[in-house]
Length: 113
Length: 113
Image (cartoon, rainbow over all chains, first blue to last red; front, side, top):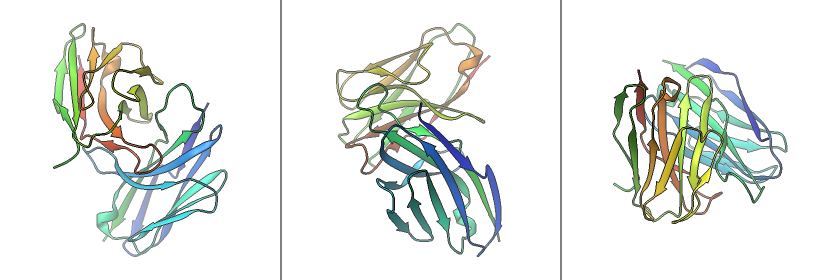
C-alpha cells in the first residue's frame, strides 16, 4: 500500500525565515511525486512534479527536491502570501488498480509579518 | 476561464436523501477523479475515470456511484446519504499523468444531518 507522511503538521515562521517541509513516501515504483498548494476554501493548486531521485524544481521562493525515500519543499525568505497548506502526493507505477494520487495530510504553513 | 467547475458549492442533506455532484472540465482532459477531504485524513480517492466510458473504484468507493457522461463531465452520486459522508468533495482532471499533475475544482462542501 502506498503511503505518504508529511511533517511537520503545522509550521509557523516569521517573514524571511527560511525552512523546509518534508514528505516521506513508500510506493511500489514511483511514477511521479507531486506538490500542491491549497488555500482555505479552495482546491489544491499544482506546484511541481518530480520523477526521479536527484531531481529539483524551482518556482519563485519554492524549491522541491527528491530522494528515493523523501521529498523536501524548501521555502526561501517566505512572505505572508506563502501561507497555505502544502500537500504532497505520489503516483505508483503499478499499472493496475486505482490510478489516482495518494496524498499526505499536508503541512499547514503560516508566515507572520 | 479554463478549468474544472463543480456544482453545487454547498449542500445540506438529510440522512437517506440522494443527490448528484456535478463536475465539468473544459481542458480536453482524458482522466477525471473524485476525492473527498476530511480533517486529519487528507484527500482520499473515491472513483476515477481514466477515459470516456470507463470508471474504476478508488480507496473509498462505498456509498457512491459515478457516471462519466462524456469527455467533459463526471458526476458523483450519493444514493442514500449518511452522516459519515459529510465532507468536502473535489473533482479533478488530468491529461497525461505525471506532467502537469491534476487540475482541481473549488470543491463542494456537503453536510449530512
